[in-house]
Amino acid sequence: MTIAEITGAIEELAPLAYQENYDNAGLNVGDPQKEATGALLCLDVTEQAVQTAIDSNINLIISHHPPIFGGIKRLAGGNDTERIVQQAVKHDVALYAAHTNLDSVRGGVSEKMCDRLMLKNRSILQPAHQLVKVAVYVPSASAEAVRQAMFAAGAGSIGQYRCCSFSAQGTGSFLASEAATPFAGKRGELHREPEEKVEVIAHEAQMGRVVAAMRSIHPYEEVAYDLYPLLNEHLNVGFGMIGELEKPLRTADFLPLVKQAFNAQSIRYVTGRSQSIRYVAVCGGSGSGFTEKAIAYGVDAFVSADFKYHQLQEFDGRITAVDVGHFESEIFAIEIFYEVITKKFPTFAPYLVKYAINQINYL
Image (cartoon, rainbow, N blue to C red; front, side, top):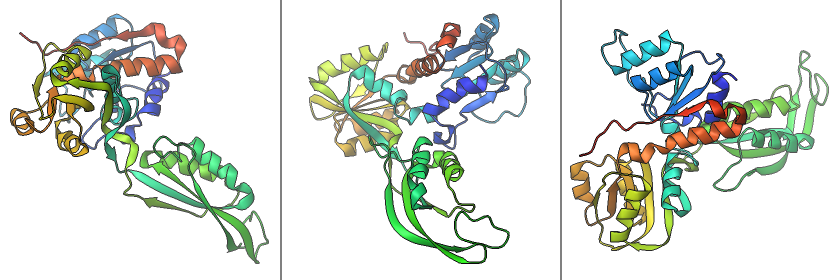
């Protein structure tokens, strides 16, 4: 089993194209074609984590936060990042991260937060805008095969619906040159062919696969197709989630529930006007920038991390905002890695090592 195969399973859930432009998800260090001797899972790559991998003969560390986030100008061992990379390279340990791409998918970090609070009727808090419409012209007899090929490549998903498409009948025309190999008609003669225009929606990150799948099954030598960037929101990709508690809780009862659900030593919070909590928004990591979005949706509480002092002051009285801690809101990334890998490669499971340590202390 190669490192690329292991990390590829994670990218099936959280494609690298979903990461933010400031991020550095993916393989930071290592050869993807090396055989994986094991996988150590962590939130942050520390020197201790690398040493654990070395001592355990594990050559792959999978983390949520990228070990190389900013640029590295030298490898002189002057800071933690330099020493981590030095040790990883020296001992042939690959470093891989799934960060904002894992934050922005269904089944990702925010979904796990919803699980902890047992929220139902879930939806994305801040949907993404990276949709593309694919329109392809295909002989009517081959339309279904082309449609199914694009579905198999990931196109055609709208919300909770799959295999979504639109078709319109028409007539195509072409005149094949003497150098062409036409699917129908004769060289040098104008030909008219009953065609179907098939339209599907796909995420921008899927474009390469969808177009390649469509072209591989399309009978024409030269395929006529259009790609239209859309402003529609991608309902299954984006940051944070909104859900509903099974029954409303008093704020005084909701806050201890949150603290327990996230195993937080302490929480920071301000309360809203409503003393009853039913609709809750969550976002793993530094999600305070989405509080206004949560307020606009009319939720009663927003659970995230890294709220600044003045932000909490601003939200006081408008919404119950709860800061559970960055580590506490994202530690579920390890569970996701474990579940994805063991489901895809069940025989690899015994070699997985869970590793996580919160470097922030509380007194």
